[in-house]
Each structure stands twice: as C-alpha cells, then as structure tokens.
Image (cartoon, rainbow, N blue to C red):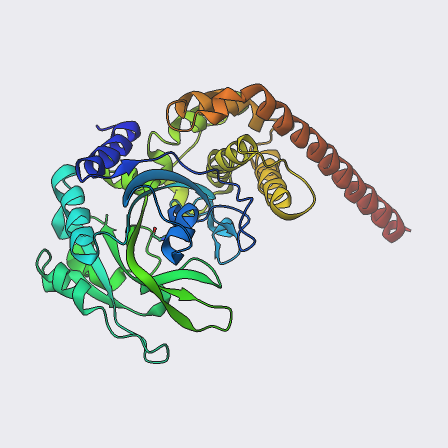
Length: 400
Ligand code: SER
C-alpha cells in the first residue's frame, strides 16, 4: 500500500514534471491579512498575485499547505471527530497558475494525476461544473464543461450552483467558478441501487469531494459586486487526508497512516482501544479518539507557527480547540491528566520532513500544551466539584 508520504510526493513530482516550482507551506497563522486569522486555503499566500498587486517569481507553483477551517467563512469545527472526514487542520495539495495556463490544462492534469498516476477507478469519479447564476450575472461554465466532456462520460458530470461551484476566499477577495472532483467509495451493491451522481454534495460520508479546481476571474468587493481580475488564474486544492483515504481504500480518514500513529499512541497512554467500526453511530469513545487525533495537529502546528493560546482572536481559537480535546479525553476516555502533550513526539517525527518547524520546537510546543492542559483540567475539576456540591446541597434541602 502506498504510504501517505509517497502519495504527497507523487503529487509534487507530478506538478514538477509540468514545470511547477515546488514551494513550502506558508504558516497556518496569518499575520498580515486583516480578513483572516488562519490560512484556510492554499491560495491565501498568493492572494496578491491574483489581485495583480504583486508579480509572482514563478508563474506555476505547487505545494502542500497547512490549512485551518475553524473560524470565519469556512468553519468545520463541530463536525470534527463526529464524522470521519472533516478536520480542523488539514493539508491542501495545490497547483497554481498565475496568468499562465487555465481551464484546459488544469482539468486535463487533474484527471491525468488521479486516473493515470494514482490510478483511481474512473467509474467512481464525478465532476461538477458551475451552472451559472443569473442574479450575479454569471454564465454557466461552458469551457469547463467542454473540457470535461473530452475526458468523462456525461453521466459523470453534474451541475452545481453558486454555493458549491463558485469559490470565494471570504466576504471579499479573489473568487471564481470551480469544478470539483468527487469520489464514490460505496460498495458495488450500494452503487447499483443509487447512482453516485445523485449523492454528490449531499453530505454522504462515502461520496466525498476530494479536489476543487477554481478558476480565479473576479475580486469580490466590499459592496458585494464582482470586479473582473486583471488576468485569469488557476487555484486548485485537493484534500490530502481524503485523497490518502481513497488511495489506501479506507472507510475513514482516521484509518489512514496519517492518523493511526497518534491513535495508537493515545491507546498506549489511556489503555483504551480505538474501535473504528461503530464510528458511524457516533460512539463517544471513538469520537474522542478522533477528536484527539485531529485536534493535536491543529494545536501543535499553530503553536509551532507562532500562535500561543490566549483569550482573544486566533489564540482563543487554539485554546477552544485544545479544551475541546481535553473535555473529550477527560469525559469519554476517563483520562484525568494532561494527555495531548504526550502525543507531540510521535507527530513531530511523522512530519519531520514535510513541516520541520514542529520537530525543531518540540520542547517549547510541549511545554505550552502541557501548561494549557493543566490549567484547564484544574478548571474542569473545580467546576465538577462545584456541581457536586450544589447537587448535595439540593438533595439536603429536598430531604428536609
Ligand atoms: N481555493 C479552493 C479551495 O480552497 C481551491 O484551492 O477549495
């Protein structure tokens, strides 16, 4: 089975062979853009290239970007751990063209990579095309449709509205129509009963979007209007954790080798066993394992990128994520001591060659996480004691 590291490398090698410059991930914490707290898409660091405010050194770039979607327009926090495919921090594999290639090449290459390099089964792939939006004065994406028709059978092409097929970075900023690629991971029996195309963008846990190809053509202004950009660009984002799940043939992102290391470490520490089978009924213990495996990554990489937990702004988001993880291990794994910081060596080693910043600051990040855990555990204990005391007082009153 291909490992997640090999899968990531193949993506980068593929786009390198298409003359893309490979660049490192930008920090997940955003310091110079008042519209964002965290990087929520691979394109954030390239915003000024799209808007024409700056000229890029390379017209073609590819990378894997650490993204966090827990605040603002793109917020998945409450799904995380409950289902098997949303994350706080995730890697977005992306390729970009800044005023260089456009729809034809982007679509052809995404198909080539998925079907010829990764060898995904074409009969399980569906692509979506923007159907247009009258109110916004946007026509249907006829070029994207034409290009997909060269590669994909008609019954594997679906049309999507503005919500699903017009990507925007935030309330303002670069945006444009997009074409998504979805994979149907259901069994053949299920596929025979309901065609995958009927389940695209319907929140089905086995019919999931893996890649979004955005064609940047507009800037959304504060007054809500769309201003055409000086040039046309490509911005693609593929969810790495989902891609690995598809290639490794797993039912859940957490069963891939991206997460199994931290899950095994959590099992060792708590003495509990992660049972991935009842995950679809949301058993709390299984949810706790997934919450921890997910959240430790968000906590570790944001601290390593310079954001300490605090009571305001980005720091508060990190604190909330950390506390959510503590509540889960405290309540559902019955573990009452700091746990998260013990997972950091495993994580740092796993990402040593992709995001070396964690390994380089392991001691510092561990100290910060442990102190936060200790402080919150004290608060939890105090709160529970207060509740116990009020319950006893109440029972004493009612017994009188
Ligand atoms: N910007 C798009 C997204 O985040 C594609 O990279 O989905």
